[in-house]
Image (cartoon, rainbow, N blue to C red; front, side, top):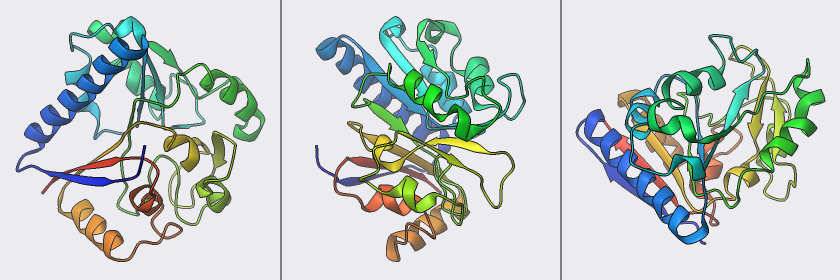
Length: 234
């Protein structure tokens, strides 16, 4: 694999979501046919919900698909802030209920204490991951790789062997657990959907002046290891 960046431009969010879902399903179907299993990494938040609605009804052997999260807030799985809860309500239903879901949140009270248990659980997911779907905040963060957070530089280091990192954002609630950049890039494809004028403007700015510590998503976009597809809607 080599790092290439491809942009897909759409005039509506619906069209972008449909095309993105089709592309993900095609990759998962190919992985199952060629390797007997597929792995999908997704992000939380409200933005992916329409995508989840399309994926969960796809005609796919979901029992052969492993799913986990790019990051998670260190809260109870029943919390309204839990990405796991979001997935259980919006993705892991209908046909996709048969998928093999691996939570990132473990039973430990603190993120640092739970990293080893979470890494052991994550190790069950087939790698390289077949598809990693990321998001981007208006501050340029992706997964829980937040600008200014303690430990960010280590989490972005491509020679960091740890698959997971503990992050406490300066500008968002809750301690987090996140896949490191090296783990996210241990994939056959990274997909980054962006919608709205503000995020498009941020994307153009960080593409012109990439700075991974200021805009952590820059590290994904400028690396030369893994193909990245950006799905843009005004």
